[in-house]
Length: 429
Image (spheres, rainbow, N blue to C red):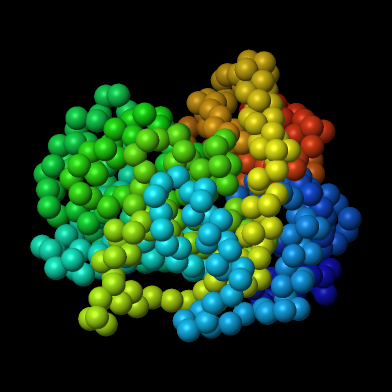
């Protein structure tokens, strides 16, 4: 329809990660209810990917909405230089008590990419402020994704997302994710840059945008021990893995050696508002304490520590701390395991490969001959799922489920039933 919301959108909006030459009119969503999204025509879709991995407790959660409403009546925003406010202080206090490591300070920003930018800038300036020989190398994993701003792109995998900007990105030393056969080689790379590495940034246990790649905690732990012995700062990007996605509250709880900095966003507010944080330990913060103003960390955002977003974060933590929420996270994992063991691994052996589970995430590859992000099978699966009332957004030929924690048994079963139908329509195509 000419004046439909989808048509109006097409006339004025540029969507992220979208080739508009091939895009159909977007679906106008007018309401969210738990794990469901409802469009303007009353069609209902199960949000099987938590709206880009941000939604924890469901759409339109009344507890979070009420808290935001009350805060908006009191204070919607204030510049966060000379001023502070209760939601920011309380959220920082509560996070510092539960983060995996000895963190002492919280720096607020707007999203995951900016949280990573903050960590990288802190790490680089740390060595400058310490008046030590210049460390100008950052290490990261192959297949990493840390965001779309220039610093976060620089420490992300070179490829489709970064090719247009490759001449403007700083050099990064990339290493493989650790496993039993490559630790010696990785250690050799680290030692070859002895005294040059400012920081190592990593997604603990799960490289999500890189294709839901999973690796074992014990090897990461051994690798972090090497970095710490070399006095290299470690940055944990838990933008996705934080707040229960991998099972425990943070993926870092699975390892003994903890990072010097941790980046959080996505589930931080339960998926309701934009907010990012970078937490650091006291050693890093101390390097910026000086009578020399040149050693100040000159970084900030207009909406730093927005009171509404911080309030949403506090409300989300309230819900996460309930036993019922923790039980639901474990229930989803058990359902994934049972489904994969009893049905998926049997029916999809030819087409569905590398079936894997971590916490609330189930993933597998479609064996279609093309292992790349722009594989057209992604659109095929997504569109077919939409006709069944499910929203899935595969990463190329990697299909995954990452539902909100409030998903019901009936809704999860419907997603599973659709997944079991994938081999049939893939063969027909």
